[in-house]
Amino acid sequence: MDPTHLHQIAVEAMRSRGLLPAFAPQALQEAEAARRTGPERNGTILDLRHLTWFSIDNDDTRDLDQLSVAEPLAAGSTRLLVAVADVDALVRPGGAVDGHAAVNTTSVYTAAGVFPMLPEVLSTDLTSLHEGQERLAVVVDMQVAADGTVSASDIYRATVLNRAKLTYDAVSAWLDGAAPPPPQIASVPGLEDQVRWHDTLAGQLRQWRQTRGALNVNTVSARPVFEDGQLVDLRPDEKNRAKELIADLMIAANGATARFLMDKGFPSLRRLLQAPRRWDRIVALAASHGVPLPAAPDALALDRFLSARRLADPAGFADLSLAVVKMLGSGEYAAAPATAPGAPAATGLGHFGLAVNDYAHSTAPNRRFPDLVTQRLLKAALAGEAPPYSAEQLTEIARHCTLQEDNASKVERQVLKAAAAWLLQGRIGEVFDAIVTGAAAKGTFVRISRPLLEGRVVRGFEGLDVGDKLRVRLLAVDAEKSFIDFERA
Image (cartoon, rainbow, N blue to C red):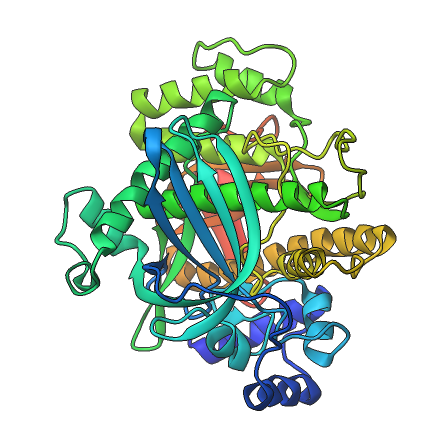
């Protein structure tokens, strides 16, 4: 399948789910005009360009949202600074660019390419924290104790300079002792110490969350592989040490952000994951491995079971993780009302999977609208201004962002399925090992591992439930309609 055809399928999928596949001319003109006018620089902005800031991201990432830098303090504690791109400085509320972002609410990452939330003149240039480029940022400044607790934090605006753009795979292989260091380690003074401090710090933050029941899962997503412009495979895009490192730092920064807004008496947008509705199915899954779980949702008990399975069966852990994640359900956005200083926080806004109570998405404003909204709230609080959004507006934004995130996921899956169906065209009748990823009235779905893709079981699905393993035979594919049909073998 050539990329042009796949791109057209993606465009149609976007439109059918209420997502805008292209920017209006006015939005593109507005983004281009930002190059001439430059960012607003009102208020206090610290100059932190001298610090050894660096980024770690995918090899092909061009929209860099955050940098970090750390310094050891006394008694085993560490100061961690996370700088988030000041996207709001170039995207004015109510403008055409903001309007597009508010409709889509997220960048959509399909097998046919990325449909960015912001025009690329912004997201991959002016508001991206590129190596060697001076940029405005909102900095989350945290003190992390040796046990992984964030004991103090502050937020302020600053100018920053990315000293090194590192990649997940290269950093991970180096930290694991499987490859030489990335070239910047030798060329940027202090960078080696920085990455090693970060690695230690991430472990402390993760350990603290895991003592509270943060779930240690390892899910795998499919990455399209192209050769000479043609799709040739869908391979697993797996977690690694560097990805976990960055995730741990961002969870800490997102928690500090939520608490900062709460302390300022501001409303906020929260990211939450309720206790799982299908806990009974998780209990049954654990029981099938000989492990009893409590009758009521218990994150600590679930994480103990997962950690034991990771050790007992490393090869099967990704499939087990996938089953548990599907039963946990998806996260959602919710508005947290403003509370008076000292008053108790709103309840029911925690994140079951991360074992944190206060959590706001804030570290990716180039590609997620809730993060841009949160950034505007932060900057208003810093400037001593009233919140730029009312509680009612935030409630509506939260509802719409949850809806569009779901739509974006469906588009990503549909395009991936179209690509997968095309890859499987000559393999009708073949039998594959599979795991059930969905079982509902609309159908029973399974995932196979080579190529890594999902399809529907149209025969013999009776009695199947999420997490079950079975053999399936490929019955039919239709790339245009993104159909991949299996029967139980």
